[in-house]
Length: 223
Image (cartoon, rainbow, N blue to C red; front, side, top):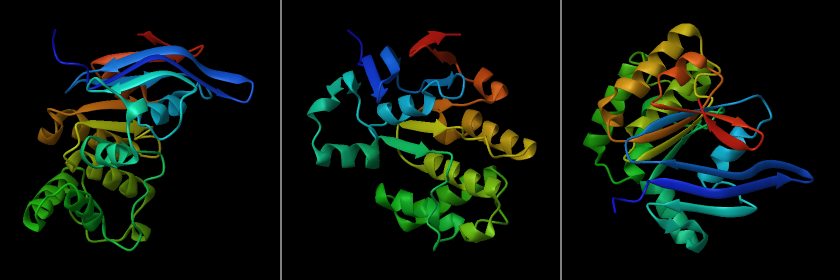
């Protein structure tokens, strides 16, 4: 047998009140793979992402990370997972307002164990690659919405995590910024061995992923 998938979900169920959002959904992604999930508004795409990232509780089914049943994870295990294995980019950039764009990226690298020199070099390179060379010393309140989102994506890409969750990463960006983010996601040397899952309405972005899924009727269909 080969290595277990990086992330695998089996028979996943989730309801809000009387509304069943996910109806026995299966999903898996291996190391270094990338995929996109599309679907109508309200179909449960963000719900699914939050469940897979262990940010919300499922009502039924199983979620495994590298073959380990997450039902058995302690709080310490969850902290370690979020520090070492997964990164997040959500619609709200969630940047630290008292720190510059560069510092926001570097702080995530400090937490992962990078030295100050290593963190500065990596953060600078990634921010420059998304057109923020002249903006990296600005604080979030001094950045546009698109610049904030590019900083958040840079923070996730620069990290040592092996899996990145992205919820509508280009939804608030203009055409030029979307293009720079897409190039970052699909050409950055830091992403060559990472897996990432993108929930998106951006058809151009979706078409660039190696796997594409449609969330419909509470289950995933390959497209």
